[in-house]
Image 1 (spheres, rainbow, N blue to C red):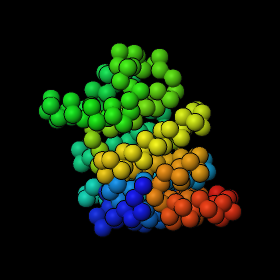
Image 2 (cartoon, rainbow, N blue to C red):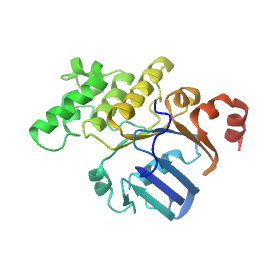
Image 3 (cartoon, rainbow, N blue to C red):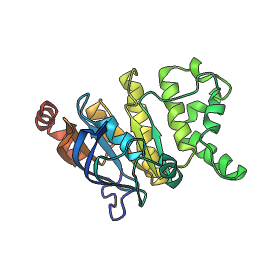
Image 4 (cartoon, rainbow, N blue to C red):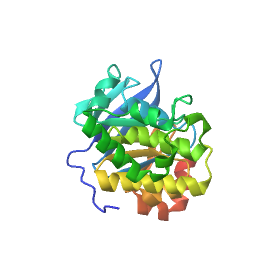
Length: 243
């Protein structure tokens, strides 16, 4: 884990963001940044605005107010494909796999570039997610929950992202599997210099692999700081969750 991830040119830079649905803000005055090679944990109770934040960063929701920059360009909520082309990948809460397709077929959907570059990207993803190597011909719908989450991660990684958003990877999974998946998130940041923003309900596990953290409650940042400091101050963490 890097002690000083550089934020001189953050891959995500959010300032004064109001975001929500139908003109009603769920997230209010959010300021957030993610540096290259950094893992940032976005924490908070259900309904705090974490998923809304990720959808806005991906360009799937238009900001109501404020500025959102991802990988050096603005995000306005009208052209999410351009954000993806810059190098953003999003692993959504529901994983969004094609259950009737095989593991390899799902992975191919994320590949870009020339044939040789696609092969290299596939191999790098397999190095990070070796359990997928022997599952290539199995349909995604027949995988365990942990294997499905690895496949969702793999499909994002074969695109060789510079910024990775991961939403609630622990949903429905045993803590031991969550711990393994979070260690992979750390490896992704360290080995590829990808900036990672991860939403997670297993607070201490997330902070164990993160460089920094933000705690959202009722759409506002209640607490932020180095992950080690947040992890060691459980009382303050609990107060931020309670609002």
